[in-house]
Amino acid sequence: MRIDFHASPRPTLGVEWEFALVDRETRDLSNSAAALFEAAGGGLDDPRKLHKELLRNTVEIVTGVCDTVSEALEDLRGTLGVVLPAAERLGVDLFGAGTHPFAEWSHQHITEGHRYEELINRTQWWGRQMLIWGVHVHVGMPAVERVMPVLSAMLTTYPHLQALSASSPVWAGLDTGYASNRALMFQQLPTAGLPFQFQTWAEFEGFCEDSTVTGVVDDLTEIRWDIRPSVGHGTIENRVCDGVSNTRELAALTALMHCLCVDLDERLAAGEELASLPPWHVQENKWRAARYGLDAEIILDSACRERLVTDDLADVLTRLEPVAKRLGCPDELRLVDEIPRHGASYQRQRQVAHESHGDLVAIVDSVVGELHASLGA
Image (tube, rainbow, N blue to C red):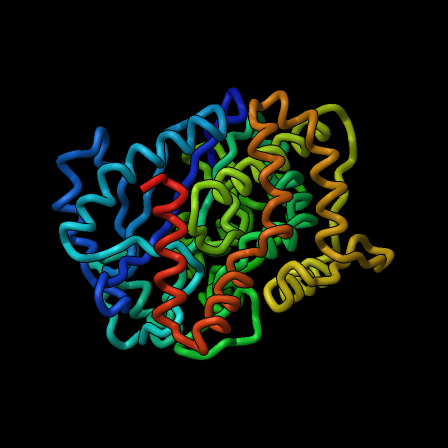
């Protein structure tokens, strides 16, 4: 099975930012995406920048093809400038986190369309449980033969991204004890979770042929790995991160993902052999980051050396500084340091819950407020 990867001539960037819609009064999820599309559609310079998702309580804001992090953030700000006033008129707010703290899955409506109906028909209870939101970052890849080795090497920094973005500690009214409950919920879908580690494109093509012949997927977009090739866009798509509440952290995480991908690709092109981890270490690191967030002790290599994720992050950021300068995002990459200092979203949400004596509505208020504050609204 031949799969043509439409390689990008330069390391372009694209960002997809998922939001839940919450009622401004009750703070519960609102199945009002269709109304928001109608209210906002006419004001967008490109209607493709606002996407539907599986559930009617969700919208996704998408950039065009960008060259820099600042360009991508400006694109997103422009779309939000139309969508937020439209949402206000409908009595809803945009909520940027990995999960909603108290919503019930049984009250949510599926978006109309054969693709979504088939997903729910196949996955049943687990599919209906998917009250989760994330951020996806595409980075253009110039050569198909480097896609799979770079993807495998990116798994060495999987726990860093998971810990930094973790924003889903509360599920169905209870603190789960996890920094990212979303990470473990999403992998219950049959084609989601960690990617297989292939070293050649031919191996990936063989996997895709097996998956289509046996009916695992009908379309390659149904391969919902946490990091995956996006063949039509010519990118590696990083889907590790939980939902993000504000533009400052989004800029930081986008810069980190952009620099990581470009750094690995350039080193591979120069003849360097990229480091990778055994799949069992990758799986354990994912669990540790989801469970403990920024306090996770991660496995560094096949020799089983371990280190606090934030200590290792400091070295990663130092290594990426020259790459960030070339990509025009040194300021955004430096923002990554702020997340451990100020607390990741899961830590801030728990602090709000503690200060409000367990008021879950206060958590929603705080997450919504962070978006408006970051936009100067």
